[in-house]
Image (cartoon, rainbow, N blue to C red; front, side, top):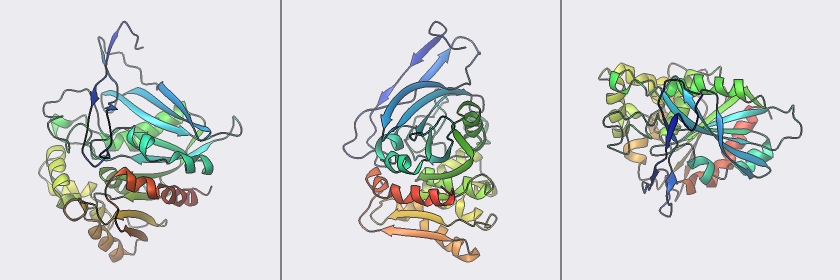
Length: 325
């Protein structure tokens, strides 16, 4: 068990001015806690870091040791107000974008207001392993730390970058075992940018696990954009057929038994739209196999959380309908 005597807690403050997660007015954000221990005995059970009341419910942040990733991880849960101790809430997973951690969505989206009203819990994991000190992990903002791309890396150097299994398997099991008020059998998934890519690919490959999916400005065809090509080359190697397993535009032809409409919002003033996001490619792929897609192009909106906070209520209500609340 982790104790104060056995462990050295290292917290790092950083200022990120990249527009993907932070508005131009954003200030210092605390990175997730990294715990370096003198022995190998790690605590996998989540421990509470912080708790703040909001719209009658609570934002709670937790840390735990992840055997899958080989490091300490943090995640947020927003618990809606409960009318009884026996009440169980369905869950909406939110996957954040490049440079983000588990705090951005919770602090910036305003999603808690409608989540409280509708009785759905919000789950926000981190975007990559941290504290492993892999050479090159922090050299660029679009790869390594804060850029896990929600895949299972196959290259030895990046063997701990197993974010697909963490999100799909380890985290849901952790929630089921430790939070009886969460009904993880009723789950939906959403995300932004890199997280939108993660939400779409995870949903398509696990139609039995998630009731619905939505995304804001997703990286929709990563095998054909610079962000995806950089990440996939390093994480997955040079075999491009392996890349297709994490590309929503490619996957839609394999996993097209989609009953719930896919909801995507895309800002028309998003500076990443043409080169990185390629949402039109995903739209074409859905049309070719008859997958229901509602792609809303929003005039004047960019890639920021100002955009997300404007339309997040629509997305949560989209998932509420699929979850039969």
